[in-house]
Image (cartoon, rainbow, N blue to C red; front, side, top):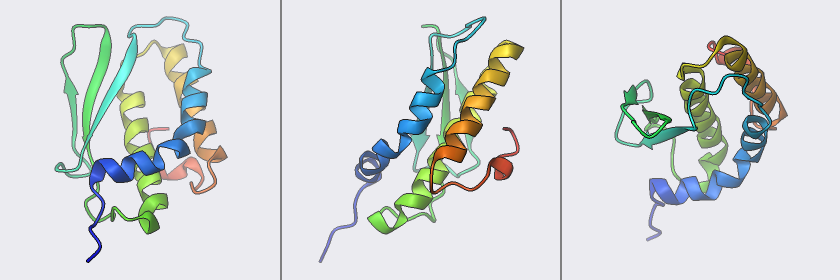
Length: 129
């Protein structure tokens, strides 16, 4: 009997598909940086709409989000997992308190990364972008 992959294993498999998102975020030159980085924890045991800011005194904006448990962990579900993770990561990035010019730059970068990724739909399904 073939064992079903674990959450972390399936995430490692799709990690390379986030190169466009990383490049887009890295290209944003913040005008008024408030945080050193944004830390995101994705919990497989939380519902997809879960969102919790975590107090962090080290200069990071940190949040925990959930994940849709209906999305399988097998390779056949990788496209859906990428879209779901992108959705959650963009929720956190947009929720991060940034100066207005920086917020707009981050939104533009997220939209660009979304439209460049072949398996994503146009950004209309992410209302916060």
